Each structure stands twice: as structure tokens, then as C-alpha cells.
Image 1 (spheres, helix red, strand yellow):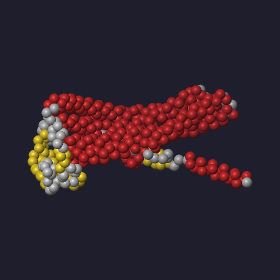
Image 2: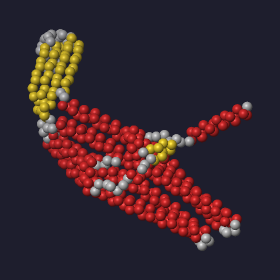
Image 3: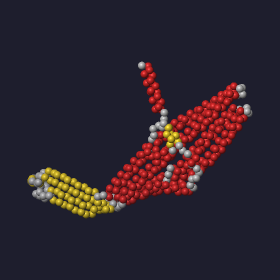
Image 4: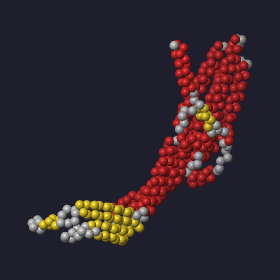
Length: 435
């Protein structure tokens, strides 16, 4: 019985351990963007909005079709009671009891002051706006996911730097312990480097925890179950050969979905103004009707016959109240158009500023990388010099620790500078609207 219980516990522990282990998944930037397309709930919701807007266009176009109404009734008619005006001399008149009626009426609007066309155009612009909103959301989600992706890459590289320095520090601790046994080093020297080792291990653990958080957030952004994402990106492929700032500004002005969205808002305001003005114009329609009914009850005694009446003509309708009501909506529509034009100008300024900033920061990132590369070179030289002096008992253990910290910080900054180049490059593409 005890053996069975022990086996069951072992099986449970193995299953829990296997459930906790995350599978690794190598991922390029292209794969990252593909997963955004299929896994982002925000993007899916925006695409659904396009379908709704398409139905609205169909609904607006249906207003061009004629209105046709038909009615059919059957009734039981009671006898007629006729009296004088003072309700005296009541007299009953028998009439046919079965009544029937069939009516058919059709109406085709031929002129509505432009209201129908403006309504259709407004619905089409709303569809364009929904489609453009999908592109805006796609760019935003790609940029958010890319930021998480690069952060994960930065943390992975940072952990590698810590591992390298932990290995180096462990070797130094072994050397110092060996020197201590030979009477060439103090116990305090060993203690200092062991403290340095604990500090490195703590720094590595912090990066590992941050990596776990960043990986979880990226999985949620991509709509993935928890897997360990391993970024696969060639940082060396990103060079400084961007187009000139002027060409990029032109590209942003032509293709930025943010700017296109504000331009659509201006067009929608123009159509809304036309729609408001249409209320001041008459409505003209061609009408036709046919009525087949019986009996004829408008004569005494009633005539037990079916009769058919039809007509066709032109109807004109004009709302006199629009003269003092619709003018207010026209003024409001004009103000909305003016506001939309101002908003479009503000959006153009924002896109221009964002592009200029993104372009400048990308150029700066290469200067930072060269600076950090030089810092790493100097830090390594300094570490080697201090290490040689320490081995010759010409430097203190504190000098070695300071040199190690400087070297570690320089290496971490170089890693961050390389990844920052990738970030600033995609920030330029994001500002241009085609990430």
C-alpha cells in the first residue's frame, strides 16, 4: 500500500513539473507581426467594426429603392342606423355584411435635396474610417508587441552578460582562495568578492523575473498560451541607410493612417453639412396606388359591388418649419467642419513632429552605440590593467571590484544600445505609418 502511495505521489510531482515547464518558441519579427494579425483581440474587434460599417453602407443605398406597401383586409359590416340631427326618427338600413379591401401603394423618391446621396457617402466614409482604424490599431499593436519583444531580447542579453561576469567572478574567487592558502591574500579579500558574487546573482535574478513578466505580457499580446519566446533578430542587419528626413516626412504625410483618419473626419463633416442643408430643400417623389374594395358604403342604400380605384402622380413635400429649425443644424455642421479642419492641421503637425523626433533619435542611437563600444573597450582594458596590478599586489581588492562593476555596466549599456537601434528604426517606420 505504501509503495502504491509513493508511486502516485511521484507521478503527480512529475506531471506538475512537466506542466510548469514552458516550451520555447523562436520568433522573428515577421512571425511576431503575423501573430498580432491573428491573435490580437483588439485588432479582431476593429475588423468586426468594418463588417458593421459595410452593412451600414448597404442600408444607406437601400434608401434609393422604392417604398412599396400592400394591405389586405376582410371585415363584417353591420347594418346602418340613420337618425335626424336630434337623434329622432331612427331608421335601420340593411347593407351587405361582407367587406373586403386590397390596397397597393408605391413611392419612388426622385429628389430629396441630396439627403440620400449624402447619407450613402457618409456611410461609405464611415466604412473607410473603420478600415483606417484597423490600420491604426494594427500599427499600434505591432509597435507595442515589438517593444515587448525587444525588451525580452534586452533582458536575455543582459542575463548573458551577468552569466559571463558570474563565471569570471567565480574564477577570481577560486584564484583568491588559492592565494589565501599560500598566504598571499587575506580572508577579507575573499569575502569582498563573495559579496560581489551575491550582488551579481541578485542582479541576474532581477533580470530573470523581469524576463518572466515581459514574456507573459508578450504572450497575452499575441494571444498565445504561456510559452518561452526566444527573439530571433539580426541586429547587425539594421544599418544607418535610411531615406532622408524630407522623404520620410513626405511618406508620413501620404501614408500615415492617423493623418488619413483626420482627413476622413473632414470629409464626413462636409457630408454632414450637405445633409443638414438638404432639410431646407423640398422632397419630390413619384407615387402610384391601387385600391380594390367592396361594398361601396358611401351611398344609401349601400351598393354590394367591388370597385377599383388607381392613380399615379408626382408628390412634393416641403417642411415649412425647416426655415426656422434646420438653419441651426446647418450652423452647427459648419462649426463641426471648421473644427475638423483644425484637427486635421494639428494631426499633420503631430505626425511631422513625431517623424522628426524618430529620425533624430535613430541617428543618435548609432552615436550611442559607438560610444558604448568604446566604453566597453576601455572598461575591458581597465579591468585587465587592474587585474594585473592586483595579481602583482599593486592594487587593492576594492580596485578590482570597481573595475568589475565598470566593466559589467559598460557591457550592459552596449547591449542596450544595440537593441535601441532596432527600436528607433521601427519607431521611424511607425511614425511613417507602415511598420
